[in-house]
Length: 347
Image 1 (cartoon, rainbow, N blue to C red):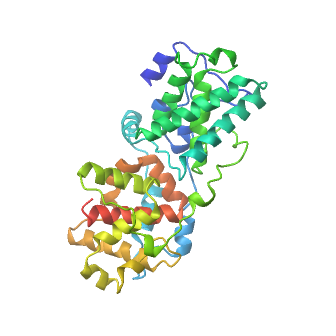
Image 2 (cartoon, helix red, strand yellow):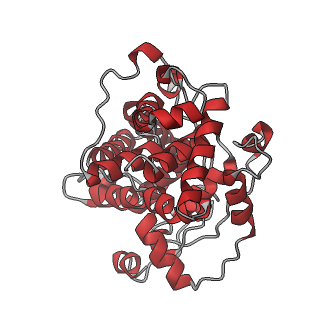
Image 3 (tube, rainbow, N blue to C red):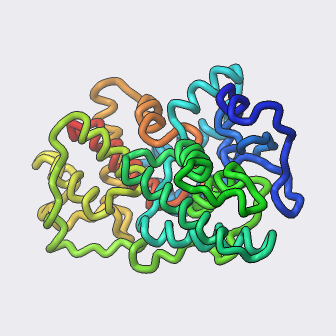
């Protein structure tokens, strides 16, 4: 929060063009002052829907016990926010909210168009508006390509780039760099289907990823082009990307297959490992993998919830809660695969 006030000394509470009160995109995920909408504060809201899809599927267990993932969801729903605000802020600064996109080109084109239309419609059409949209999208690309996909980091970078001498035309617009940075953070969260408080829906709708967002499993070609990470750092980054969607489901599937020994395959009743697809419509493979995770945890006298700190470090505590509560099936499968790789795969 100190750095925010340093950037905007004695700044009054601003409002978005059109009169909407400024509220941080990060409040949609329960985050607080250090990533609040710059340079203004606003109310927050949290995701509230239960893990509907997972419960409709009946969870991942067929042996009568409550599914481990459903257990975590129940625990999340009952957690009381007893930590002090300062402790929460410190933890959220470490974890952050990570951008996920199956196609960065599509996302950046969408950001450019959205920023341009937003400024044109709220003010008057100006050439500088499209230039600001292009600059914002360029910053998003630079940050993601540089390995920093944290939305808070992107927010600050967009503001810095628009205010820098490399973009001298900001004065031609009716907004400042923080207005645009805030809008970009809203759009990035909305692109991931995260509910954002106190903002408008994207003018053109969500990004159209087309075939890029749909898994195309070709079992005979699954192992082509995949190279397992070797160093500890590479393995950590692989898990992070596997969880946030930057690793394809095909590569994640191959990574898990490569760690399944013959004993485990026999236990799962699998004769040909190449037929296993943990992202297929049939739930048997992912259910078996979840049971294998629980079995490995039982061997070391650990519980499924003991893996939460690892997942939170990889993905961000608040966004992990949002994803679990939304119950998006692909994410739940990715989470199970990441757990296996960490518990039994040497990652």
